[in-house]
Length: 195
Image (cartoon, rainbow, N blue to C red; front, top):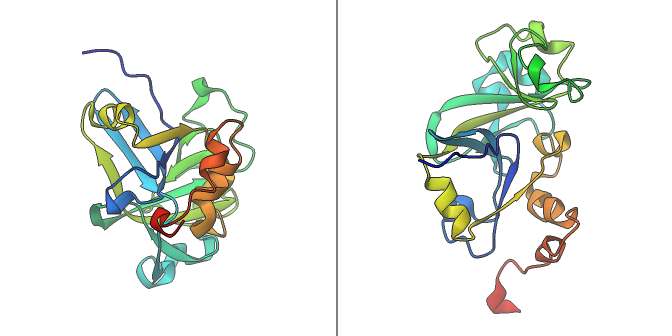
């Protein structure tokens, strides 16, 4: 098998050609990507369910909007916490295990939260927290096939992507900040037949 270059911490931005309704205009943060597969969460699918309705103890740390996000179509009954810890972005990759107790670095200042830990452990360190129900997953080579088919743009993530206060505008915002022809894709109409 060929060596897989890790895309962990990068964003997958759905191309207008991606036909899967689960990922229409989706922005996915890759939390893990290696030869065994890929796992990520969709950053721009808020639900009407408040964080306090399912994880009361974490509600105060959740950023606006304080709702649970649909992280993807897999395991919708499970929850993942993703948090940004300010001041952690400049740390070297060799020091990945450092950071507040109950938080594991994924990329830069972005990391996974142990939702079984007491929220008080992280309260002082966390800049923003998002709770996701479910996740997006790909088996070995599956994401690489989708990339080869042109289903996704791969771009750098920024800590603010995790906590965007306007998640419904994240797809356009991420594309617009690209310094390439991708910035033009942000103007693609929601329904091209109405153009």
